[in-house]
Length: 91
Image 1 (tube, rainbow, N blue to C red):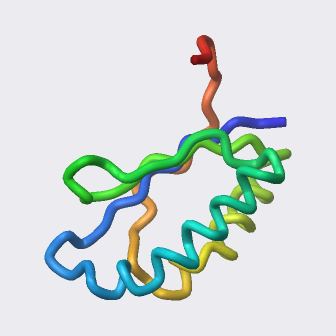
Image 2 (image 1 turned 120 degrees about the vertical axis):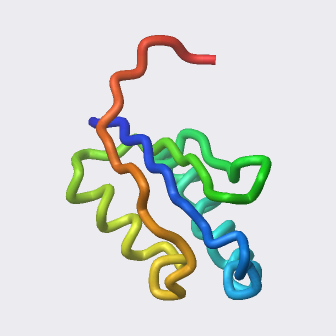
């Protein structure tokens, strides 16, 4: 298994499209959390983006998960960071 940190950026001047698709995005994330694929997720306080931590088999699975996220076809984010992460401490 591999842990990936994903940082998304949003266009804060045009959030209407993101708000429309956000319920489907959050439902998708909830299903990933239930399946053990999503570790942590949430938007930044200023709504400029989000940080998500995934536990997946490899980068190919990570990219597949992102491709299936409702935010992706809606085009409401840019992928700022996708990096494998070595977790040292847990909450």
